[in-house]
Length: 231
Image (tube, rainbow, N blue to C red; front, side, top):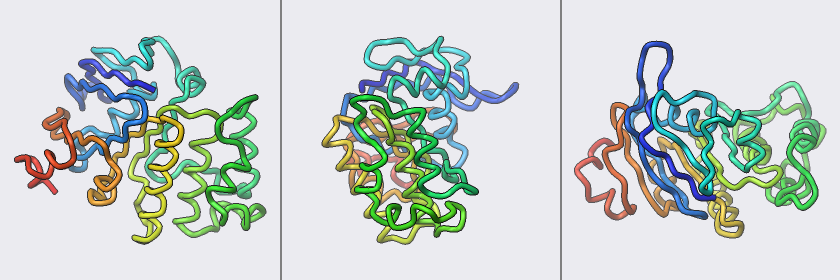
C-alpha cells in the first residue's frame, strides 16, 4: 500500500503536537520512525489510523483520500495499528482472541487466517487455551502482532513493539515483520526506541523532533546525519 501524508497538523485539545508532517511510503517499504519520547510519533500513527482528526493536511492510501473515513473503514482498506502496550484481550484465551478478531477481519481470500498466525507463531498454537493475560510479555506481543495481521493487512503500524521483550525475541519478531512485508508487498511503519533493531530491517528512516520531521532518508544517511546524536 502506498501511503501519502501531506502537511498534517494534529494534537489533543488546544495543544498541537505535530506540525506540517509530510512523507510518502511506497508499497513494501519498511520505515523506521524514530525520535525522542514526546516527539510526535504516536500522534502521527493515530492520525493516519483515524483515531485523531488532522487539523490541517490530508492522508491518502493508494491514491484514495482517507480524510472522511472512520477507523473501521481504514481497517477494511488494510491499515493496521498495533498500539504501544499491546492490543489483546487479556481475559480471553489465545484462540478466543484470534477467533474474535478473525470474525471481523478474515473473509474469503484473506492473506492471513488464524492458521497462518499459528504457523508464524508456533507458541500460540501450543497455548490456544491459555488466558492471554497470563502469558509472558514476549508471548503477548506475538499474539498482538498476530491479531494485527489477521485478514489482509496492507500497511502495518507498530508502536514500540519491542518494549519488555528479551533481545532474542526482538530480533525474531522484527525478522518476521520483514519477511511478511517482503512476501506480501506490505508497508510497515516502526515507531521504536530500540534503534538498532528497527534500523536492521528498515529501507528508510524518518527522525522526528518536537512535532516536526527533521530527517527523511536511507539508513546509512541517517547514521551520518547531525540528528543521529539524538540516539
